[in-house]
Amino acid sequence: MNNTTYSVKKSEIQRKWYIIDAANKPLGRVATEAARLLAGKHKPIYTKNIDTGDHVIILNCKDVILTGNKLNQKVYRHHSGYIGGMKEVVAKDMLEKNPEKAMMLAIKGMLPHNSLGAQMLKKLRVYAGQEHENQAQKPEIWNF
Image 1 (cartoon, rainbow, N blue to C red):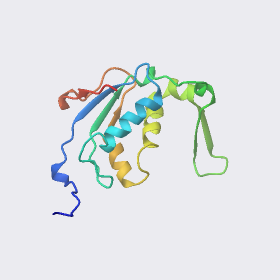
Image 2 (tube, helix red, strand yellow):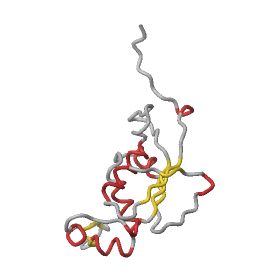
Image 3 (cartoon, rainbow, N blue to C red):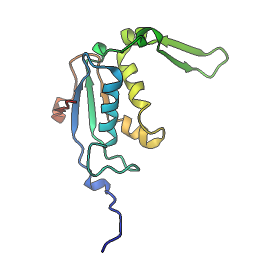
Image 4 (cartoon, helix red, strand yellow):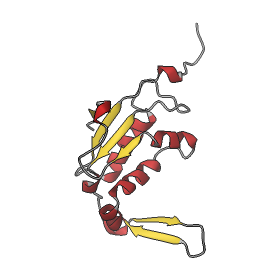
């Protein structure tokens, strides 16, 4: 009887490319599915300390929806580090001006907050519209 735990090796990881269409879907639902794919949780070889995930392309971020009253109440905050350097942007303005950033921040918050999470985030491509530059990778459409 073998009592050793199997651990996947980097050479055994096969990465695929997936497209998620965010049009008319809630921001959080799209973000959770993208984070799952980036981390590799949909694979049987998932290991939490190794990046086993796939590449994800998210299209139509400008058409994503926020449920409830989040459009007016949700606030994105960041600080420059200087006195009085707090910047606040309401979700409505963020989705109008930079929908890719809103999606990126939602997904980043769902990944590990360490170098492994940063490595996973590099496999994410987010586009406001329908066009993308990754046709050469032959991405598959991911439905959820």
